[in-house]
Image (cartoon, rainbow, N blue to C red; front, side):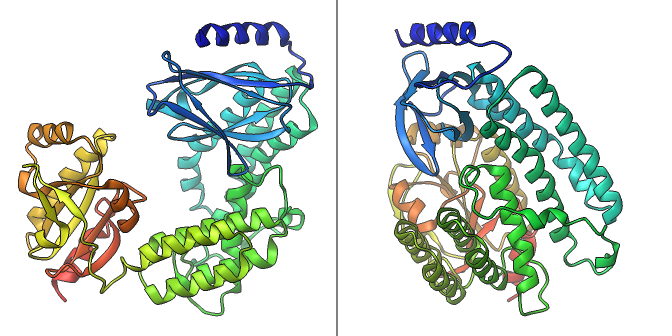
Length: 466
């Protein structure tokens, strides 16, 4: 029944649309099909708040009605976030395949053309990333020339859209933000990439290279959760923080001094309370997830509590800090309960008999768990001084055991968590690439490393030689 409603909605939307899109009042519909769904629900959010949770029907369709929505950026969340621009009177249909989420996403109906333009910009930014990696090696004048050429292509796409459509001023601002803020963000990234490069002097930059900085808005509520604006501000604030540091330390986004200076910069520069609080939380959280020193983490959290005015954010950061500080050096690894391949129970600390590498994998990503086990086999042959403990983060025992046996993984080194929710909180499992290194007594040497990072061998060798 719901599928027929969506088809009817699409028909009405197509009939009501013409090439000149006009703004109307009234309710708005957002619906569509999720191919290969990861769960039974779709979440609708705005400004980091969940508006509603919509259940997929038997055909993996959903539909949602907004009552006279405010023009602007909303998000749908189904395993991944996707921005959707909405205006009153829209009837937007989307279709997405979760196997290739961004590449497969398309919009139709009234408001569909607008969102397809924004999606086009998003994919264009992704495709140009390899080009930017090469352009970043150029001197400033040549880099800007290349960047201007890319920007002209974006502006050409936008002009073609305007020739066929008559969007509102609000949408024009959102669309232009993709061009302007991504262009400016690339300049900020270029600046930070060469912050430690003494061969490039300030004089070698064109005089108007940073002209855009004079007109930056630090309180844009329309764009505050939209990635071109939000990411630009983050990278701009990185450069401000590096400049403000009272040290000769190299540029390092993960260092204590950089993050301390950046939190202070956010507090002094950003004038919107909501935007300021979001940036403070994001950057403090990122630091804690990569922190290695409990004393420095505590200083960051103290500063965060002084400048943030969001009590929910403070509670969230406090919980995270309590967990990450327990994973810094000289703390013993949490004694979580594991399930063996024999379906028996063991404590994590009890299975550590010698220096060990603990890594994690999930059945949800076939490519990842095959890659990580190949890497473990390589490290095992090079550094047999360590034991390598693989922990599966899923909850289905038989499926997990079937994979372990079919791929001939070492049964005695493979485990599942008995309580994954507890494990995720205690070990701060924010990434499948996370790994820990502990000594023979279970004391943490590295609380947040990555087996696929080239530095892993240097870390393993370093602890052997200590």
